[in-house]
Length: 97
Image (cartoon, rainbow, N blue to C red; front, side, top):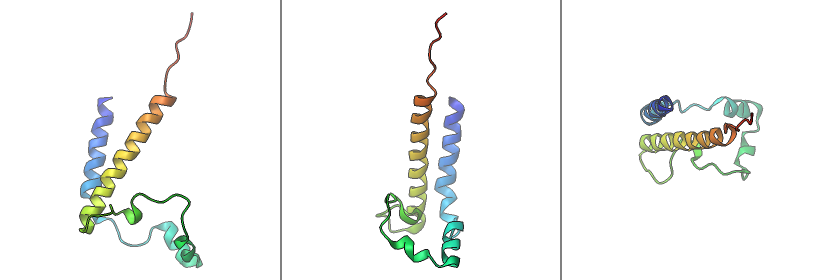
């Protein structure tokens, strides 16, 4: 289990220090939506609202810092969900002999 926390720390470092340097160009899906002319449909109300729209943590004025905080928060949320899922699904049942 110690290895998992080393990976988490590495992922948090990447999220904090590299995410502010991510490309501002549209991602693949956004580019296809622009090319095929249905990008405007994305402005309709979403089924699930993103907690960090455009990978920026709301309320932080500095865009680099807001992106880093969003990356850290997203990493922690994903880690928490996956640990919870692993504990739920990965429970071992006792075998009776």
